[in-house]
Length: 352
Image (cartoon, rainbow, N blue to C red; front, side, top):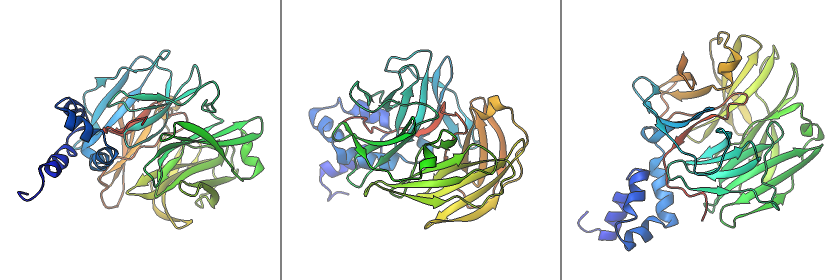
C-alpha cells in the first residue's frame, strides 16, 4: 500500500463509501469534487454498492413514500424513513416502471410523463417533452431500463396505440429519443396481450408477453441492447390450468422466471434460461388464496435459499427452496404492483 500513489489510495477508499457519504465528500475540496464526479468513479462505486447490505425497500402508498432497510436476520423491513419527491406530483401518483443500479424510471400518472430519478441523491430528469415520445400509458406500454456496452443508461419504451406499435430508445448520454424498428407478430399489438416491464440480464432486456385468458399465447421477447435487435423465444412449458403469468428475475446475471398458473390457488415453478431454452429448477408448494388487495401490492424477494412473499405491511409467508443461498434480494411485482421496488443506494445520475 505504501508504494501506491496517494490519488489511488484516496480513490480506493472513496469508492467504498456509502452513497450519501460520497455526496458529502464532494464539498471537501475542488480536487475531490472533480474526482467524485468522474464517470469512472461513479461506475466503480456503483459496482461496489451492489451488495445486499446496501439494498433498501422503496414503498409508495396514497399518503407517503418511504425507504426501509431489509433486516437480513429476520428477512423483514426495518424502520422507515420518509422520502420527499423532488418533482411535482398529485397524491403520490408515481408509478415505478423499472429500476437499475439505484436509478428508477417512474411515471407521473396524472400527466403520463416519464422521469429518471435517483431517490438517494434526489436528482431527477424529465424524459417527456411536448415534442418527444416519452409519455406512458398503463396497460398499453412497456418500459425497460438498461446500460449498454458504452456505459450509457438508456430507456426502451414500447408503445401500443390503436393497433400501431412504436419502439423508442432514450439515451442519457445524448439526452434524446429515437425510433428503432421492431418486427413482431401483429397480434401482440392487441390489448389482449399483457407486456411486462423489461428485466435486464446479460446485455439483454427480456419481456414476457401473455395473452389475458386461459389457454392463450405466452412468449418472451428479447432485446439485445448493443445490436438493438429483437427476437422471440418460447415460454416455459407450464400447464394451462388457469391464468398464466411469468415473472422474470435476474439472479447473479442469470435469467430466472417464476411461472405461475391457476385461478384461486397458484402453482409456481422456477425456471432458468440456458441459451434460448428454459430449464425447470424447482416446483413450489401451492400458494393459498390471497386477497386481490394484497396481490396488487405484493413483492417477492429471494435470499438465503428461501423465497419471501411480501406486501407493504411486511412478510406474508415464506416458501423454502432447496437451493444455494443467493447473495441479494431480487424483487418482482405482480399485476399493477408498481408501488414498490428494492433499490441499491448509488450516486448514479439520471443526467450527464
